[in-house]
Image (tube, rainbow, N blue to C red; front, side, top):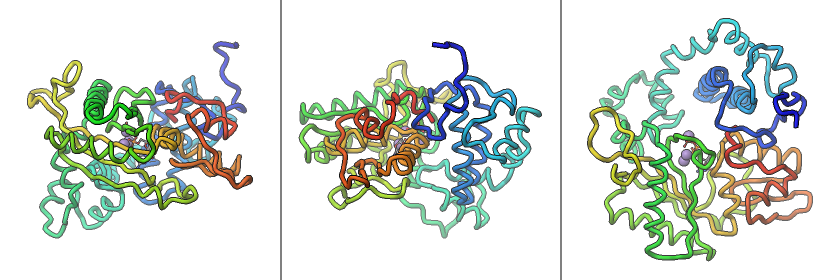
Length: 371
Ligand code: CTP
Ligand code: MN
Ligand code: MN
Ligand code: MN
């Protein structure tokens, strides 16, 4: 109604699931800086400081205006002393000395480089750094290092999979999956999820949910799709994980825990001819194909809404949904279920809207979940 009047600060929630965050970030300079420090804390396994900076970045991403002074942030949630100090430096000098120092440190640069390889997490990166390794050449020349299959593929396809994936490439992969599914059943449901469902133009991979209306057939469909891809010769890497769903009981307490659904982490070969407008390749790269990271997950249909909500993200949005459920509603939420601890019962959901309603939250559209 007020149109241009900014939202009163008091109405901006500490929970990302009560904020609307589009991909249009008006405070990118500040949030990029916060995310560098968050990542650096993650490298030191300092989870709480990492979270402080991730949360501060998330709050600023939700603002429809650009922060131009510290005074303007009065009353905003999740901005601690440390984050305010960094913000003050940037507003005053155009950059933060702490961020500059981090960006130019050998440790940050090396860990950033190592974790950019598919299959290399902060733990492995730190181990290699600690042993004095500083470059890919160092790692590949070190005889005592045994790369696992995932890391070998990570190095082999490094150039391609470190390049962004476009929306057109994501759509092409969607068509390839739909075609494979059509060969066996008319009962299947496929959905693009992850960052592309949130309206992002680019991603680091493409995430899909594949399932069937008939509960229990979903894993069969996933295996069929992969067989089909193998016959087409487009599977460059495949890590298939069977469902362990039957073993699950209550929702798990840790956010980081993987879900129990059958899933597959893939690297696929995508042909230029399959993509509207062709591939986004480096100059002079005329191979006519590229490698792309693809994640497929197969929840049973009665869990579809929970899986969709979990796999759509963003990570910060999901984290706050779970936190809100636990602390404000005494409910536990994960990628499989919503459990009301007061009533001692599981709440069913056929859609994401149902889950928001159970939680007493206004529905937030996927493109407003870029927290
Ligand atoms: N996810 C999950 N379980 C996994 C892997 C991912 O629940 N085993 C969720 C993540 O929490 C995230 C979503 O799936 O919310 C998508 O993850 P990811 O592809 O890593 O991130 P995106 O948001 O899609 O961003 P990007 O463009 O970088 O891929
Ligand atoms: Mn993704
Ligand atoms: Mn990502
Ligand atoms: Mn993914």
